[in-house]
Image (cartoon, rainbow, N blue to C red; front, side):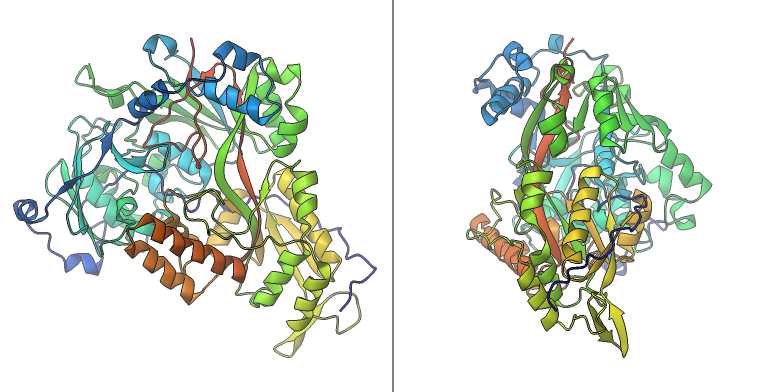
Length: 639
């Protein structure tokens, strides 16, 4: 079928909606937790495993010490040998108009505090998030906002530094050791840790949390990924817990990093409500959770705000300071779905930071009105976006159709006009600067409507009834190529989805853009109840975390993608300890997925942030300025 001169109608209404969870592949630094008990229902495999006595393990394991690091002190030491390219005063007086400007501003404002006298410990920070969290329970986290909250309220044992190298945090851990055969990790936690209700945090919480996460009745697909590679977790006493691995894997270091919840809160209630959100008892702790991290939730108004308050019992123990005092007295997350309203709030000083869209960065934040209170900084962030095609639908089961979608889209319109040249086109899930990206990246798709039509014709989607819309006989019935695309309620992304709609109309396909409220959309994605969806994924600390999205049958493989070669390569990647060889394996996974086009890969978006000029210690990793380490944040407000 050649392109019809008539346009498919664009009069399909927009509802309300949100994209894929932005950090679905992230392994966050929250920490372990758990104890074997009836309520947690340990797996049958665990019941067959009897942990050896600790003395026997110590005698035979050949324990190898792993890094236990004060992350903030390490960053402070790193910066001590660096000289910023501009003074604070010069950086605050500048407008960020170029890459050199950005480097000067970022270098000056990224300096961490070296003296408590610099820090206003009574300061509040008003942060911006676009949508409400589905749950405040750390094992339920899936979307970026939930990771943000859990990173401040959850307990952290493990994390990573600015190079994404794994570590245990000195604030909560005494020692971390790995057995010589790589089949065990032993963690000794500090004795001065308490939950926000005053009860001690122990290794039994670690064991209990493991069994809860591994209970199939508990809906936690995000945090179960990786945790399911463990054979068992056993608390030998209040401070000592050992993680037993099924295999010696390069990823074991990340698999032990799962969220922790309080055993004494949930051990007797779980069997009554496996959702952990519906019963009256669980709703109580959803709204007022018992927290193990530096902050507690003190106020929550649905779809408006979440307020966290510094927990004195986190950094004080028996009247003595035992940990760094969190820099903010209060952290208020303002939920503002409309980016224009958020920017206005920032100009008025009502919020202290926000992610800026490309349009906001280029056209709305360059005047004196914006710079009166604020500045802006960009940094590397490996976040990619695309259209997700559900391969169990009649429309997208054929790879030729999915490739036709990729050929149909107008990338130049998206990159040059919609995104002002700030974002870069993606050709797969790994950023070109990442060690796991293919050394010879596949060629980028370009819009080629003739090629798109050839592929559709070959797949049997032609205009058989002459109405200008492609169709195909499926089970004896003529089916029109008309599908729904779920889209976030963000103007920038609504425009992008509308562009796809317009492009497909040129080749005889009807694309109905539909928006849904975030929790509804996330639920539909998890249940695979969609035809196509726009969304983005954040980077993980290890490339293997992406198997949660791409491996056959995984929890957030929303579109039912399946390639046995990819599944096998993920297994190989876990077994390979040489980083260079691992990079080649994941690079091949990247290539195969791009060849199969389960997504139309669109763009990588660096971090583009607006910050209040009183903020300091702003540092970026490929996970952005806040996902930096184990409950750790270098950002503070000056007095």
